[in-house]
Length: 264
Image (cartoon, rainbow, N blue to C red; front, top):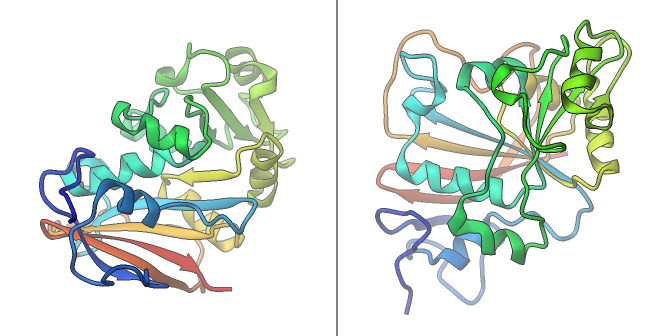
């Protein structure tokens, strides 16, 4: 008999789509246990490295509310998946503008997901990698324990030396000569054994990563809010022609959350 989830979920989360389906259970409709939700969002075992992005947006496509922050479009159900994705990742990659705008500091894995992280063979710390063309370290990300905050920048970044001083030279990745090259960024992370990579944006960074064809998966939560206005979308910048195919869809209290895998 299925039990109600306990990872901070207020009500039952139900499965809408699983591709391929689980032959031992119903494909659509049943409430999910914690273990089933974790399994649905697990990184594929058949690949040595995986990069996925996570965004929440309103039903009319806004990724921020009137205050310009993503928290205004989040829901309790979306927050569960948000924390789970962090727990299943080696590292979180974030653009400098988003880090400042959203007030990012050093990251912690939710206490009730520590066992999930350990079972996946991931260490307790969750480093954050700041992607910046300027090389400046936001105040909120300064002073952390060595290795908790890292930077990906380029050799011509004006703040490079300050970044090395603040974070330590071993924690600053050079990913190009004049700009951050996505393939170099991903390769640099993999060299440090960060193979399960999660990016939380922002829109310019995500567009650049998709354009470079280094994104394997989009995790998208659609919340039951209509925001209006002229706020940003998930991607911003170059025109893209990339296809992602839905593989998992779950729903709770009107929020639909899913995994879209890159179709190559």
